[in-house]
Length: 190
Image (cartoon, rainbow, N blue to C red):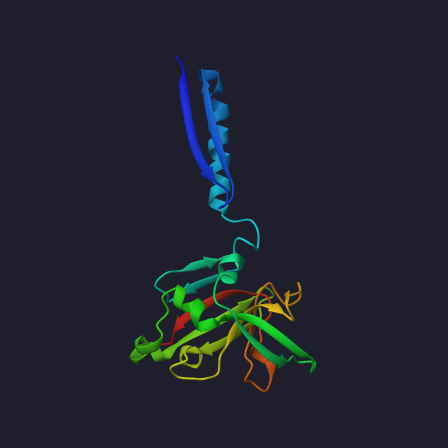
């Protein structure tokens, strides 16, 4: 008796492992081991920061895991500011509200009623957290733009700052200029 087995397991967007085998019953343990290994690898998800740079979760229509390449393809804006050391820096990044819109967060005319009590908790890799009220991020309510930046002075952010950082240019103190942003949790305050 001959068994044929074919399966495809994606480890990430760029590569795939294909297992194909024709064998007798003697090879069934090998096939089972390969299936288990493939299932475990698939369940672990992406392995590098390039694959997942930012997670958007909470009270959103579509929870997202965005890669740095996803953010790089979005329209970028530039801001010239002084950092907390007083040095002039040119940051490049995307509007934070535009990133949140990808997850279906209410904005524009949809930002009214109970949605006015929605906030965004930005979390860094080291556990530092800051909060933004959703209306303060929306251009319909405020001219003060908040950016999710990936470049400083034309270069990718350093390891101490990035790969992603939130910059709030209009604030007097850079306390909410959170470094190493990895998660945005959208919370509806009750």
